[in-house]
Length: 159
Image (cartoon, rainbow, N blue to C red; front, side, top):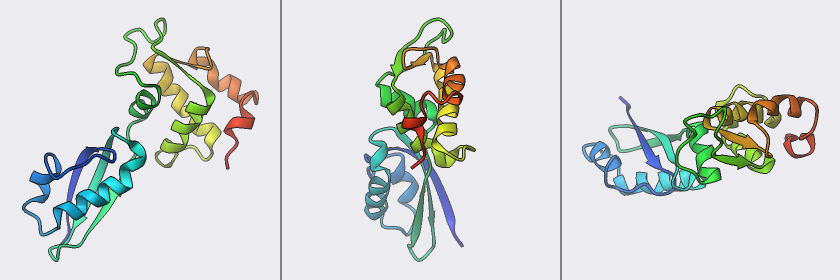
């Protein structure tokens, strides 16, 4: 019978210490092998907290499912700030370029309802509004209209 462990680990920086070690220690899996696999699969998230689900069997076999960090965490990591604005409608903490927005949208797209990069970017822009982040120097609340008008079609076209 399979058992499951769910943890948050820093992307590419998991180690056999807490939170993984204490969870995996009593199981039949090779802890270092699990840690190495997690680091390999989460390397792209470099230090950002990533949700990981480990499913293991009594024979020591296991599988790892890597989730996508919250949109706010991806934005903060991309722009290099720690906390959003306490007054996001008036005080802005950072400005995001359209290329940075595309990067976050593509990272988050598997977890979103969006069917293409342009619509994923609109969803990410909504999180920018609540964090107090502007997009291309303008209030993120105007991004949807700007994107719908085709202003960013060259950058946001799905590959």
